[in-house]
Length: 155
Image (cartoon, rainbow, N blue to C red; front, side, top):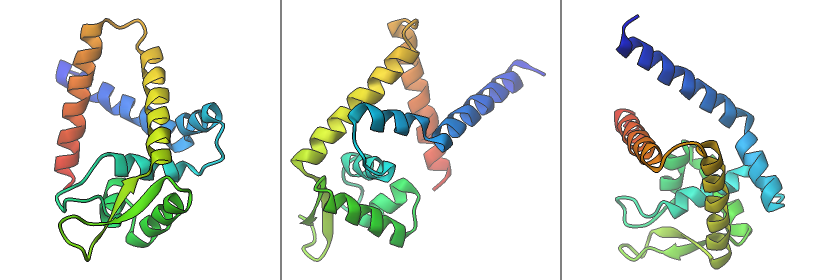
């Protein structure tokens, strides 16, 4: 097996480990325990999708959340409705088109997103505690490049 094949195999194995971890939702469960919150993990995915900001339409919409979460429209409508009911997301009129409804984080939603970001970053920092700053920066650059390429290939 040549070096390139070995690298591809290593990436595949790492991605399988990540998928398994995500499937078991160990990270999300640890997050819920740390935040001492009874929320459904889908709430955090909605908050992430809204926090990512507006897409090409100029506003975060339920359709945009569905695309970001890889959900069908009816499931996305339900999880967004739950996020609105929880008080973390608000429906707002689109600035570009008054007929469209956009989504924004409320103050409590922003506070929760900030706590989630801190938790995740602390976990990543712990996993990379022996890495140099240069290694962290290179990993961030390459992982961002990989996920951007992967997303573009799946369009």
